Amino acid sequence: MILCDTNIFFELFRGNQAIIDELNDIGYDNLAISDITIGEIYFGMRKKEEEQTRELIRKFRRFHLTRDASKIFIEIMSDLSSRQIGIPDALIASVAKANSLKVFTLNITDFKQVDSLILYKPSRRLIN
Image (cartoon, rainbow, N blue to C red):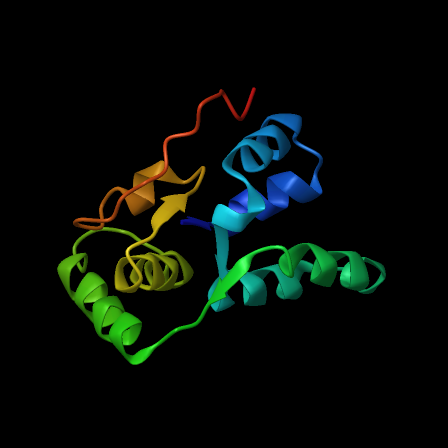
């Protein structure tokens, strides 16, 4: 199972064909979204996009911020106190680690700082 970072959805909404093809290759049965990403998407969403966005989100398996993920989040923030990682990214990473998920992101730099987090390696070039 692969947990998609928020930037994957933004590229999907922009019509990035490489992202669309990669997600189709993975298969929606193998794709997941976290509540954190859903919140970030809704925060940046225009009202006219709401139904289409909700319909897209329903295609993904949803993962919540659990007690285990919260503990991992605190560990990540403590371990990375001298390095930069955004709170939403640390929360997404904690959900992935708590559920043994790979993370599909275009933000490799921040996520690779998280110990034992497995990043999904796409089969194609995703950004020109």
